[in-house]
Image (spheres, helix red, strand yellow):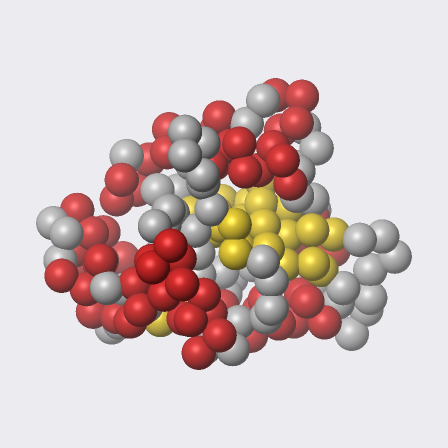
Length: 170
């Protein structure tokens, strides 16, 4: 497996991009989005979240190629963030720091501090679309430095290239 010649930092959104509530398993994207909009009970049970598709394998593959993986969660409460961390450990996601918004911060603030090489996030269909996405609000001078990869919410990342270098060129 090819290794990177220069470091790549990959910032991956968790909920809706690589994890989902457990009652979403076996449902269509349309049904899952509806569950979120209707606030189905397991949507708020962060400890029971599961990987979407083969997200764990894809991220482990990219990590083996030399990518530094960071995660971004929508959760801001300590207990909920601990549940997200536990889910990442339980399902063997590659090790990586879990980032979150602090008081009065937006997702863009987190991304602008990190300036990842690649940002992988979903289209936020269930919560309002493009305006809710991280990359949408990032300052244009910083946005130029970030490769934005947007997937459909709850579609997962299985369809993305296996080689991290190819992801840079999508």
